[in-house]
Length: 495
Image 1 (cartoon, rainbow, N blue to C red):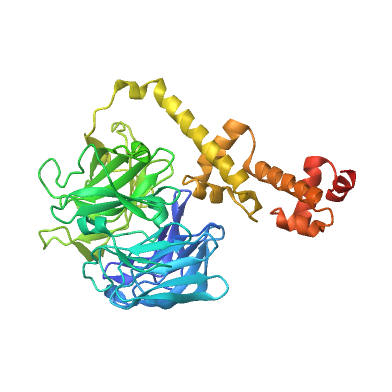
Image 2: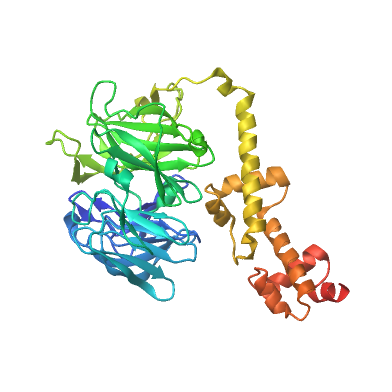
């Protein structure tokens, strides 16, 4: 799915597109959202808000809408607490959404409530452009970024939703790179732990910061992330890092002025135990030698997809965007070498969708040497340990924290809590327990209901159903009888 943006001439677009069955389908939106935010919500819909009010990236806008991928439709949601562009958004566990960030206008932290809409909860004397919004402990959220809402360096200031602002010592040494996504979940390696790309303020070195439960620390790299390519030409590293949690890998992207894309693959598994991260570097050259600046999205299968983008300003020596020239190309980057001969590269949609680059295969140009044992049985053993560990954490989350009591609980909710994806959780559950997710949750709910009926015999069955996480009395009765062979009342009378 591709949302908003602008056309040649820097005119905002009021449509989104989704790709299915080899074809791009266009969906009208209620507003334009060039420089807006797009936040995936737990229920599978996407909140789209704010953006530039006029052509040329000028001004801020109010509008917010919801896109529903199941019906491929949008509905107007209301207005923000103030006009915003270049804002960021973060979904909260209780269904609300936190929003912060603006550009050449006043900024504040705002909260969206499904009942009351958007409201300001904390005015900011100095806001940010596309800030990072990261969860900390006990309902706290940190808001920070490299640039203020008026384009000045933001320094080491960190604002908090609940507490007072403070100066973070590590941000005096490192400047986090600009957040190009509105959703920090892309950079989450587990729980409330995030990897952020950053640049040293004294020498421009590119590195990583880890923010865990609101605490900042540096990540040690066994191989430096290069500032120039093998020909000595400068690389412009983009943010944010995108995490492949099942593989415990993270990806960064860079561009140069010669029409090449670079990707750093970071193996962060050792970081979780206090060790260093390893770095591999890949590059790709596009045939037309015309580079369009844009951030590739990490797909579930491990490939990287780049949609659209804007041109480079060839009048400037440094890498700079030319917003008056846009691209409709879609590129698919393969992180591992593939056979060039006979591979079916080609246009899929009338010259608009291009899967691959022919000569633009991703070749590895820098690789840390690894032990030959990496390709041996220990890899499968490590994977088995990883799956067992994930199953243990899932059991703890569901049984000890009683996640099953949450109504309308989805496997994607559990995957989010475990910092992985729902397909991986489902596969692990099926392979290690032989039980489907819905069956497991239903079983826990019925066991909880049986405990309530034993300990509180006077409790109404409707209240038992509600307290046990069932969405309705009918669902409770149907599932109870299917599992026990008795209605709840029959079981209650028997015990």
